[in-house]
Length: 360
Image 1 (tube, rainbow, N blue to C red):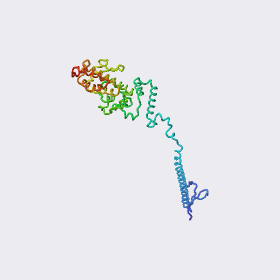
Image 2: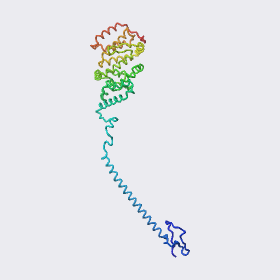
Image 3: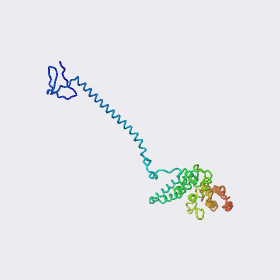
Image 4: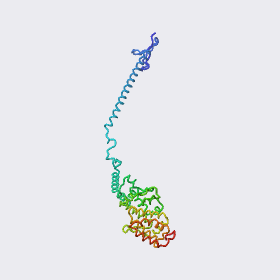
């Protein structure tokens, strides 16, 4: 008995076209077409097709691997070729365009860089003249008048640097022109702050402010030869004299009481605090050792007069400062030796000062 042909499950066949025979349990197409492949032959063909598909897949994988290897070989070559094609200007850009915003100057050219910055500040100030106040303009002009120092010079001459507006005071972190502008009439601040007077009037000795180094003889010589530094010290002199109730005429070189009696009353009360005696001593000595002897002695004359019976009742403290500290500054100087003798003889004729807590 022959085996009946089977229908291939992978082939679409219309069941209505089949003619089944009861004799041999077989079926064939109604239109007498070629018989359907048997089930025994179907697996072989299916295996062949699967093998072909696997071979195609393997071929495709091999091709993909080859393409990948080709790309990997090409990428290093491209990377190696890029530096030779890229210039320095492509990396950092043109140098002139960076100059205004970045520091491209070598360290030894700090002076030229700072001069350029001053020129830029001056030009920018001219463009914004309508927006600046007169006080800001005055401050800018003072900064432009200064002698620009290097960092090494500022470290070597800190007191000279402060007087020439190259260094800020410590711990207040203020430049000298800022003190003149903001502190001049603030008597409470000038009375209570004890860290600024050492910067205004430096001495060779160590003061109460440990952040202000003692002045050296070389710094004193530099200040004495620098008109801008001496001008700033004179401005400090005006500020402190006003606080103490005095005023200074630069033309006649005379120090006298302030013209406003009410201000004199308020300011002379500050003398009740003995630390102002120390401040006055510092002021006169600083002017003397920096070559500004006339200003120092002018202040001494005014204080000598105020200590007399004609002046305000100085008290024991002020008279003691005059005899023990102020006279010794000038009495051995040939310029003031004779006048000091006269003033000292005059003071010996005064009555003993009365201890009083009021100047009036």
